[in-house]
Image 1 (tube, rainbow, N blue to C red):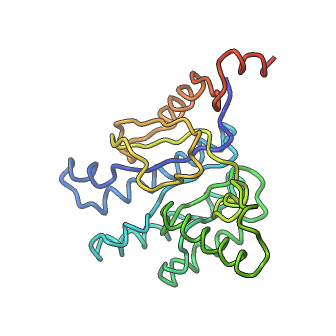
Image 2: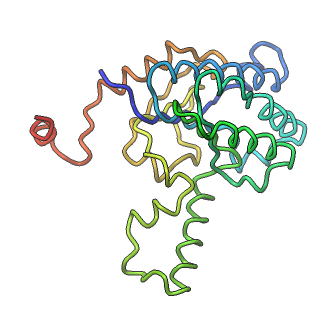
Image 3: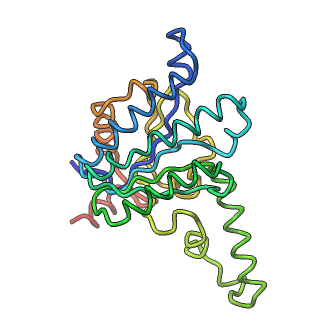
Length: 239
């Protein structure tokens, strides 16, 4: 049994969780924040090195203004420094950060700075993020390098693209989890999850427990990760 070095999670189901209980959608998001705290601590204790959480997509800006405002407020409250410091967790961000309200950006970047020296789990919050946005930005950066004569088109490789992504300093996730019953990636880490094991569960994010995280890791451990090889080749390589 092994623990994935990097787990990514699409935290889905907050709104439906609240609706089924006759509550406002914001109540579901508040409950989801508690789950973020719970799963961050569990992942840290399990020995996970990187945990990427899809908190707010570029498409989420199209939601009702009242819900976006509530989400922004919750994002600030969920970035409690004490949680990170108690668990030796380092906070990092990916996404179109410049689009965030100033108060949100200032609060989160402050926590990023103050946790920079922590050496345990790295929690990467995908905020105002989408994979198509990220890839578009990467292509623009590479095109500028070509235009400046720093890079020849024929030398562009997978590594060149990877180095231009928001996630350049992190390993690709071995396991991606989506809660809430939907079976799709929703524009999340499309490049990085090319060889991730995908785990979908019906549990809404507010109900997701450390035992559910362990179940996803158990699923990962039952998989044979071949990366295009045959089973026999994998067995031979492992020996």
